[in-house]
Length: 308
Image 1 (tube, rainbow, N blue to C red):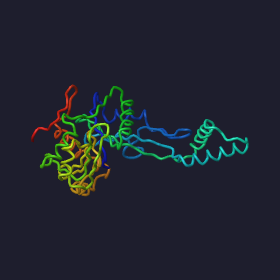
Image 2 (image 1 turned 90 degrees about the vertical axis):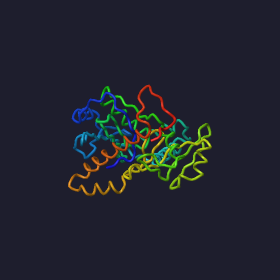
Image 3 (image 1 turned 60 degrees about the horizontal axis):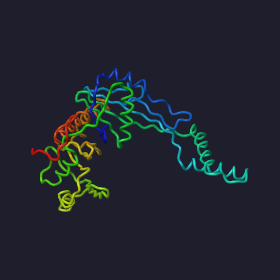
Image 4 (image 1 turned 60 degrees about the vertical axis):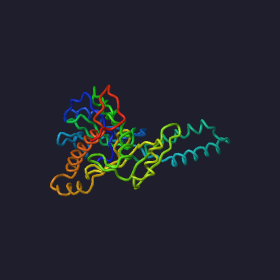
């Protein structure tokens, strides 16, 4: 199991072990989505049902936020609502008004919810106590915030802040696109997004396109900055760096896949997590160093990178 996305947070006031964290998460386990519930959230075992709520390997912790949601298509609700409205119109001789139709729709949803299918999804979070970091595999800020919110509720006193660097990713990515050399330890790939600032922010996206072209340079000279850029780290992992320091589209390259195939004696889940956490720890460290180091409280960002 490899994370495809990373929201990276700094842990503050973290004093948990795997066992103590399990006990605290157990108080907020995933309740079944029954009756009139539209959805429920809570912690689930990251490896398999019946396993602990915290998976630990090489001093790294893995947890998982589960969500059960009733599948109630809008088209079905609309169909039942229209049928109910038609019955009232035929029986009473008048067409229900807007408020009454709204009340009918809400009643229909209440009636259908117990009969709706339930789908389960999960969002993984990797806790690195050694480096004091939390990584959430979420494609959107709202999903990451769901994990953060319940984790801070489950662990009283815990505080989380987005990891920031002294040089903003946007500044660095724009600079890399204007230089001939790749950033140290990384190669620039063929996807990027450029955006101008201001009320009418024009956006240019390049996909599988050479980024050392005069066209890209002209857009940057015209005032556009990079908001996302595809990179490869050490010929081992490819990813897309976002201007908010989020990493997306993370994918292990062939050399890592071969390493996982060689270790067939161990559990596949254990092997994947050990490989992922080991590689991404080094990747995150190199990204932060490349961007001038971590920005501490009270420090301000810089606008240029120091020469290597």
